[in-house]
Image (cartoon, rainbow, N blue to C red; front, side):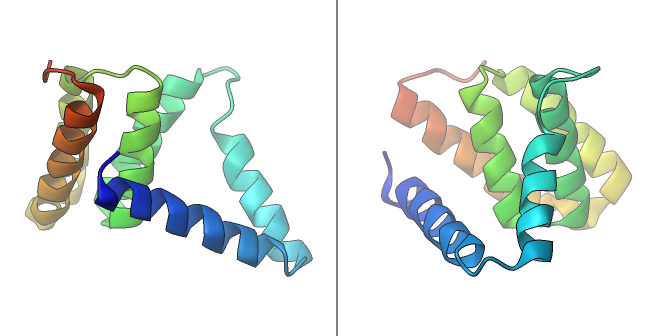
Length: 120
């Protein structure tokens, strides 16, 4: 696993645990709500992660984009599917999304290298 990917995952897990350990009811409820929002229901988890990725692009949150790209790859979502979602985020968010799109594609390349996968 690349240093950057490992660093992102480690930091996210460590800080999430630190936050949750404070036992702030409202914060913990929000974290639980966020987690549950991506569980399968009328829409499957893959669809919800792709929606989260599109929204994250429009909101220009690099941490959120990274999280959803990683989740999408874990769920077996291919590069072609990701690029279609990138297009949705770009159309909705406009050209200001482009720098975040670049970082998302760089992350896909890192994950693909890590997995020994070729871009689809």
